Length: 53
Image 1 (cartoon, one colour):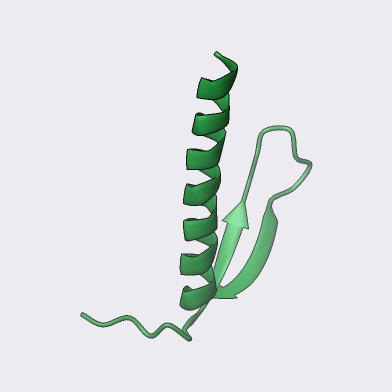
Image 2: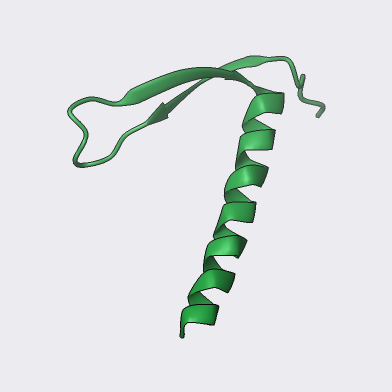
């Protein structure tokens, strides 16, 4: 099944300390790019923590 990269999605972030959820409208393409950035950030953070150890 193919997904339309321009399909609009509503993403909702919710953390315990926040007074209300944070909603954002993104396309599937934007969500994919954001997830790749977050994955890269995780790798960079892990590498930095190893350097500190």
